[in-house]
Length: 113
Image 1 (cartoon, rainbow, N blue to C red):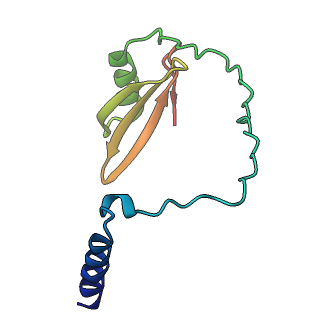
Image 2: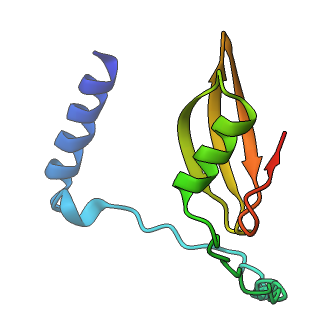
């Protein structure tokens, strides 16, 4: 309330003085020159050359890997078969109430437990 009344009094005083309200704005000038801040260059990160990833396809198909797993573990049920970039095959199997991952060599089909 007080601010509104004060603003109204100031506007009335400025209009009575003969100067328009728009021209009555005060321009503030800086007395001190701001110091020039040098621009810092961003640090350049060195580029790391990574060797290309070589994906080796398995020689045996996934069905042969599943057959080899079933030969070694007859009570196992194969849930999922995944080819790894190294050429090996990993199968997720369920044996009774346990879930395990079994690795099969992609070249000769040997089951690695």
